[in-house]
Length: 409
Ligand SMILES: [Zn+2]
Image (tube, rainbow, N blue to C red):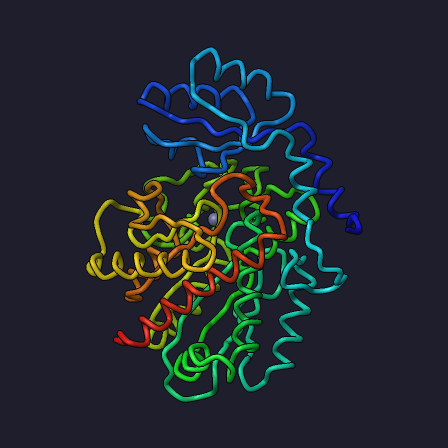
């Protein structure tokens, strides 16, 4: 493999950093983790913030090199059961770029930087005029264009499925999946009976990267960035969590009002240009959009509403059955096991998420996917896993699409 200059660039900030997994027992353990987080620089990977830690769960977090000894001692002294998932994040980040594909430009089996994805959007649209059209739905805080692809055979009054990737900047496998999906759609249309039927009868709106500014920042400055890159007066902290920024129980639970936090909900619902653009598009196309799918990582989960409340959605039984069948289909290819259920109980309560918002707009089939893995690499999933991850996820998306076609409303 030819080492990329950027690969080294990513690693350099993370030399000696570790990722720990702690098994949390009772409430006292939860308190201890709060104490630890208040005295050390800790980046929570799962759950998203210290406030979301529940008793009898596991917690993954990244620790700065200079704090690793203190943290390890603290865990030992308090008899908190733990393991080290990543011993040196620098090495694991460099090992992400392990694809054997030699392409210097765009590749479906590599992580592509934004300018490469943007050029690909233009190319794949130009190459497939019968199946793909492109529109702009807005611009980001830093002025980048938000392109939306419409994938499907031309027809009138077609139902549609909206799918987005790249809400959280560091979840690189997510944009990789949206690109893979579009490629498989055009590659197998007219060849494979299932995809052909789907594209004949449905349109897929695909938003390849929601949080483009954040994604660019993960390539240029900080691989572990999560939020948008918006600034506001009164604070030097940057960014809002786009998946806490929707008008669905906004900032009531599992989100922070502090601009410095990773789960900052923003100054108001839809304060971010990116979430506003996405919401505006869906509002304008509500009559055709029958399903909303949002792709995140990691932890291998398929979630449905609600996350902002413990209440269950009206079609809970149906969503549960659909999720069960979908994860079974996903597992059929490589044996990858997913858990599923309503967000609040399956992971943790979190308000302002796009899936809850879309559901409350009347979109009955609304799901969040948390792709591979379960923590071995976390956000640093190697490129060599892109193919298998995308193949199995594609089966899941096709399964949902078929179900939606059979249950139009
Ligand atoms: Zn995410």
